[in-house]
Each structure stands twice: as structure tokens, then as C-alpha cells.
Amino acid sequence: MLTKTGIVLDQVEINRRIKEKTLKDWELECYQSFRDNILDKEHPYPCYFAVEAEKKGLSRYIFVQSTTEDELLRLRDGLYEYIKTYRNIGKRTTLVAFFKPPKEVVYAEYYKGQFWKVLQFLMEHDPEPWPRDIPTDPNHPKWEYCFGGEPIFVVCRAPIYHARKSRYTSNGLEITFQPRGTLDDITGDTPRGQQVREIIRARLKQYDAIPPHPDIGDYGDPDKREWKQYILPDTNEESVMRCPLKRRD
Image (cartoon, rainbow, N blue to C red; front, side, top):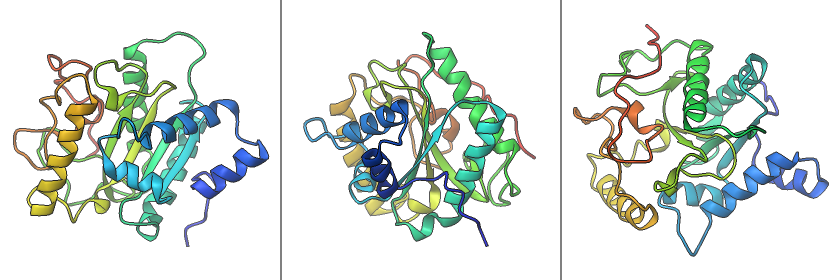
């Protein structure tokens, strides 16, 4: 039986801690900023799955103090608990990891490095083997980040964005983990999935000060790669050409 770690928090627990004033200042700021951003009615967030998850209490959260080994092992344990229980939460659930903002001024390369460091660490310390039906080569169109036996779509938000506002957060690094199982009924080859994508892309054009990045595409598209979509450049003239993750064979 999977033991609850107490690392993964829901809205009830978050609100209890806010009421009792037991959330750290940076934790409260990260969460409140996230919630205000996602639920902003004047400027609707493009991904309405994220909006609905937050509205319905289906989002889950982990606060990460640093990217030291102890903290990343703690994140690993929390993520594993979430992956093994997410189907009991709701169809559109998602997990958001908030990282404590650095005290000093840092630049884009810092956040990019931290993001890939986290994914690499989790991959190397995954309690379960890589799923047999998912290629291990990131350059394969069917590759996707996996953890705990589940393929996961990963989204990075950080203070480094200006034009790509949908990826901007005013605080530190923020990583969202979206199990593929929450989206398996709206894949790009279904009418509903196509409709959903049209709506999100239309909202994205209104939200961002820049068109969608050329690397954005549907899972399995032979011309696209999943890992390129995880942390996007702030301009459409840039693209990461080599996956920073070392393959797990």
C-alpha cells in the first residue's frame, strides 16, 4: 500500500495553512500568485484545463525549498505518490511544484538549468522502470517524459518570460506535471481533441504578445518533439536543438 507522504497538498490543506498562518511567506506568495493568474477573469488563462482544475479543487501542489539532493528526493516521493493516486482525484487533475525563489538576481540560463536538472534527477531516481511502450530516445516523436510508469506532459513557467506571458510567473521556477492519462480522451486525432486545441490556441493568441512557438504540436506528430515544448524560448527565432536529458535505457 502506498504511504501518504504529506508532501502533496490540496486546496483544503493549503487554505488550512493560510488560516493558521503556517505557510512560509514565499509559499504563500507563489501559491496566491499562481491562483490569481490561473483564475484571472479579465485575462483568461489559455489552458482552461488548468483553470477548471483550480476551480474544482483538482490541482495538487508541492513546495520545494531548493534543488539539493534531499529536497529533490522529497519532490520525487511526492510526485510518485501523486502519480499513483491521480486517477482517484479527477480527470483533469494536475500537480504544480513551486520552487523557492532565489535571493540573488539570476538570468534565464539559471532557470533553464534548474528545470532540466530537476527532470534529470527525477528520471534517475524513478522508483519504476521506463514504460515499455514509450521510446527512450527523446528524438523519437512518440517519446514523452515518464515517471512512476506514467507518461507525463511537463510545463515550465518562470520569471524569464516577457512576450510569452502564458509561461510567465513573477516568482521562482514552477513546474507542472500533467499525466497523459488525464488527456487520453482528447488526443489530437479525436474531434473533441481538435476542438479543444483550437480553443486553447485561439486563447493563446489573445494572451501572449507573440504567436505560438513553432515547436508546439501534438504528441506523436513526426515533425514535433515533446521535450522541446516543456520549456519554450521567449522568441520564435530560438529553439533547443539537443535534448539536455540523458537517455534512460
